[in-house]
Image: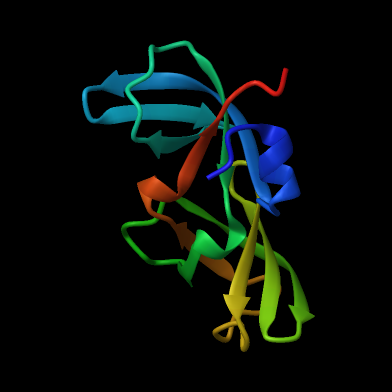
Length: 130
């Protein structure tokens, strides 16, 4: 698990975000990122600015009607890389997600509406690089 943005980028975390904690409880916090909320395990004071990382291969891509999705968007790009496919999904709220899925890309094509899901434990909270 990376501790800084530099290490996360070096390790190939394709999804790096910055946001502000909008909710906090003893179970964890919600971080507002581009009008989307990402859950983290660490209780963190409201208003705290955080950097987050999420590995592309930890994101599950699903049909658009999936009710338990964290985000929704449209497949913008598919790049076939041998045994995996790299997908770029443009979210409805303007943030891009990069995903790695096993080939074939489960029948998704550019333009498909999709839902995205990941586990809360796959989100890494990053410390300041300085």
